[in-house]
Image (cartoon, rainbow, N blue to C red; front, side, top):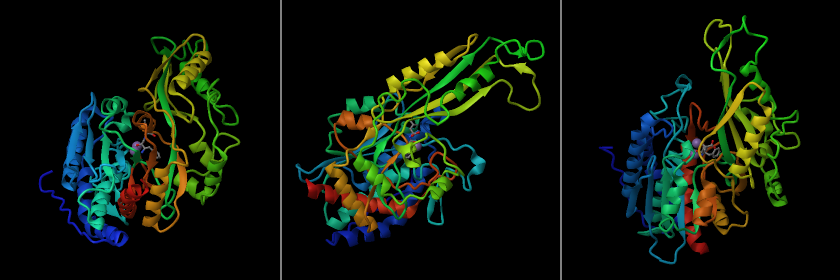
Length: 475
Ligand code: BES
Ligand code: MN
Ligand code: MN
């Protein structure tokens, strides 16, 4: 961390729009160099060997927040990996209070050979910042530092127009196992009128949008065990249960012929989107060929009766993430494997509850398992609940105005099929959520060559700068 000093100049003129963008452009290079330094820290929360790196990442962010001027910056310990909290009160005690949410942990980087540049040595190629965490989510957290400084510089203020709190967790990519407890323990200090989530994407670089819903998630490992030894397939094959075959049959019954999830009770509490939302989805400039290209796929697939966007936004899913059994190495090994395994995950939509879906899947697995084998499901964490923001939320209008100023065009409404601890933020803090996110459909989050256009991060910073003024003006 030595040698880095972000110098944040002040401007202090009053043409807010012009000065916000001027400030951002003239400070972008130095800001970007700082972000690249942060991206060099391999803060993978899923790998216990890298816990020290997640701590280093938290310290890096705490230092950057202090340099940006936040009078209060704290690293919050959890039983797992640390979060970072910061607070900058508005001068006006009656000003609205916003909490920015993001995460500083990242996903693993394998397969390494598919990266065109090393994942932890970020570079800018054709205007895109490339590296693990560039889009998900360090870049989107860092854009708030630039945005807040631009807001101060352009308005001539010494404190933001709205009180700005920041909470950046270190375990999101591991399912946020300690986050809800942290929220409950720090509920008073986190009190806010709106949560600004910066961990999602835009519809397109030239079509700004905000998210109004995320899906939930439960995931498990399924173990199907027939016996305690592998058997010679010549001596026993054909006359005993093969758990590898049995597992394949089970997994094939997760969906019916038309792509519906065939787990009894799975859809019991699913709510369908309302008319207003359907109209907004229909208004999106959607190109199925482009969507398929971003998905590196040639044909759409899924539940009959629903469009591609509905399938990923408002319908729940069952997915096989992986499965394995027996001999997978070189050459032939003529065995009946003793056991077989699968990793399954389920995306949830309102008003499905993780507990209810887990129970339905358990019942399905036990009914589907053949005689002569035992099935065990081991669930990962507590699961994630789905989350939605009502279209009439006033802060959503303020965010749309702010983004419209940055892009110079209308802001549309989307959902995301991904998941995070948003429902806990909404429920524990009793505040509405709005999403200022700037990754793109081809940002390759979680994959090799994760990237985000630097210009999207700068537009995000610009939007954040206007948002603090818009929010205060609306109050
Ligand atoms: N930023 C993503 C959530 C997301 C995914 C937003 C796709 C927009 C589009 C987040 O970091 C993430 O990857 N969440 C995980 C949650 C899981 C690890 C509990 C996910 O959705 O798989
Ligand atoms: Mn994320
Ligand atoms: Mn992620």
